[in-house]
Image 1 (cartoon, protein in one colour):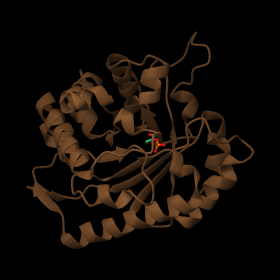
Image 2 (image 1 turned 180 degrees about the vertical axis):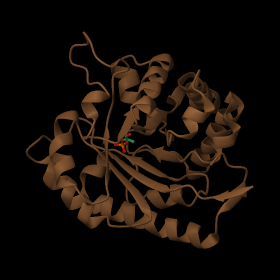
Image 3 (image 1 turned 90 degrees about the horizontal axis):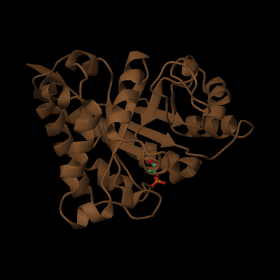
Length: 273
Ligand code: PEP
């Protein structure tokens, strides 16, 4: 029996905002105003901003993530970015964001292929899942999300998954960019369902160690409701992540949670690590 604690992670998804001339300054301001040693901070700028952001954040202890990656290593894929191209620029990658499922038609099978490529390339994946409003209204939100998790993880070896640092972001589609958020209790229940799905997919040894983030209109005003849930380990923040004041408050709150959980002590249970 091993004792373990999941990290608290605040990841910023800048989406299609900022450019090479202003991203570095914004990233540095956020980094300096969010120095919480017990919180894992990640900034995911647009591809063209990765190099200036990586240079600006050198030594700041902030992870840098891409917002997508192609599943093939190289070839005739106009406009795409491979994992190899991200080497030295990003150590994390967002996969399966609902805006890519919607706009680029990404399926669970394709997201699974991207997940395997990311893991093989040493990129730490943030796998996004979430239901549509109609799914929630019909009472099938958990089944939809479980199917997304199963689809993305299909065929991945447990040992490979265990070493991947997989993070899952639960992002109800109806809450992204809308100003509406899920209720903390619903997000917490979904986090449990996500872990039980990973368990049931044959990865029982690692499910309890997978951090689950909430995403969907998180702000400094709503973060506390999610971090109050022991099954939720942080947030994937979109719009508010472009505002240094918001990020300072969100990461500050996450620091309080990280210290409270540390003081409460680790959970017990079987661990693969
Ligand atoms: C996101 O981009 O993942 C997101 C949750 O966006 P927002 O916080 O703007 O809803």
